[in-house]
Image 1 (cartoon, rainbow, N blue to C red):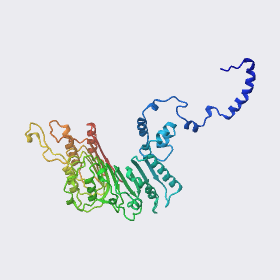
Image 2: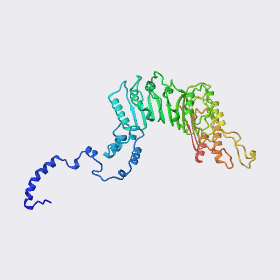
Image 3: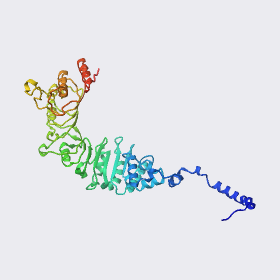
Image 4: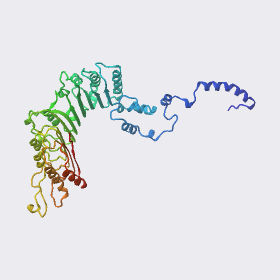
Length: 457
């Protein structure tokens, strides 16, 4: 080992000092290191490993997955780009995980007839994400609400760049001008092997030419669990087409469609359609003929039904409700101003009122039984909106009491679970003191009830 003698120490210091001062001038202190240089360095250079760093890579990926939004955007402050900015280790992990790049949302805003520089940048960024996602199934949402009356084809050019990856589509939502889909419908592949959910909402103030044809898409209905079809109003699917789709889509859990209220061939559908996993069915019906019939033999499994502004007569609505024995939640909404065609009448309410025999007539030692086959025997919740001019308060209270007494009166034998727990009414009737008093009594019994009036003066 070399030792500097005391006699020569001052001499050595005189030679070292200038060189050391020069080194300090060229090298900034550690505290002044740039943020970028710290970010590019290994996270373990200045910090001890955290418990997270010791987790298996698969678990780190799963944790990051739950940190991401449902549809990340191409933004450095969102999604995988944000995580990759934390440190080198996280950046490497994100870049090497195709799953993080397989889900994204693109929204096209403004107006234009050709791609602008920002639009081109979005397309290029999408190409980068698609390459990083490798062969991982894609979850994609593209939103383009057109502005103005001039056809805007920017989303068509973007979707055309996505079509080569269509065999990887798993969950896709396209909210686009109708002209975009019609121009590309012949470019789509013959099959979609990984497709599980599809949302297709066509927007715009102009009709597509040629007309968009859902049958040309070769959609594998049998694979889908979620389906939403909201097409052009002049090119809606019919009820026949809806039944065709439902007959093939046994895996559906959610189905939403705006359809033309036309059933041309009811005799074709003789077999029951089984949808064992269906949880939500939302039919938005338009138009139709006077003899349109609801295919009631396929409605026995429905437990939640909402009908809004459908032109049904009192008789048709009674027939419909008669074929829904498993409905527990019912929402009926009709015009507040159309008194003549309001189907909520005393006859309808009476048809849904439970009638009970007396203990002396039943011969069952004080037990009471329903003397008619009840409609909606499992009803628990009812929401009504109507003009209110075609029923009486007496009839309405009789209906509510018949549905409430099954739970309140001792010795009552009722249809299982036939207890009304919630009732809400909105009409144009003026508030009546007798009704308000009874509502307060119901509420004191724990019954969820409201009777509201919309009075236009």
